[in-house]
Image 1 (cartoon, helix red, strand yellow):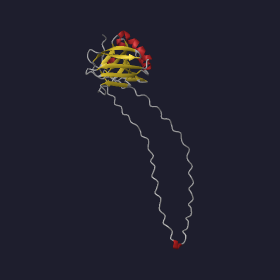
Image 2 (cartoon, rainbow, N blue to C red):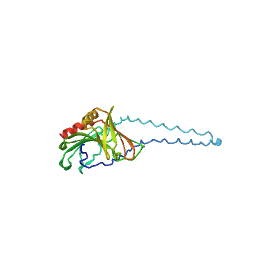
Image 3 (cartoon, helix red, strand yellow):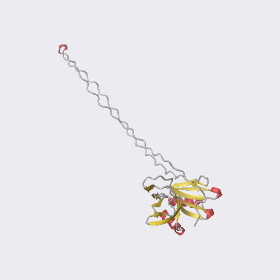
Length: 233
């Protein structure tokens, strides 16, 4: 069995704040009540008609200015884990995947990492720590494109998890809160499927019996792995 976790991964909790700027609502004032006109005194003769006031000229409307298009916000990179006490350096953000490098203990490490686009539990809304999938390369250990998953809770001991890419499902062995492909000979095939696929769906069961289904978008993974391969040859 390959030895995983040669360094301690401390994954920070990402707290996102969503806000929206409400449009200013325009309020219309109520129409003024009509003023009552006192009746003319017959003894004083006919009432003089008031001279009509000249109507104000309508102001010329200013030409409407075309609204400037709002620039699209760039995708925020996934928060990197601290590797052996060293903060990784971002190489580039590609879709949902960030490419990073670090050198804990002088040994270079490169990896692509992403958060799930949806994370569901049964029973629903069970608390979990941050969840990640990452593909790492460690030249000193001659490890290339090793797929790892941090699921945010301790797995049920002795159970397997699974990762489905398209119609193909891969068995994962579990240890504490981590999961890796069970058959190492299938890892290269799994990575190729992830490069060409749309989503990866990871399922597992926690020590308390909670079932989780995490869906990862694979958009940008191929470019992130190419960048990782350039950095860690």
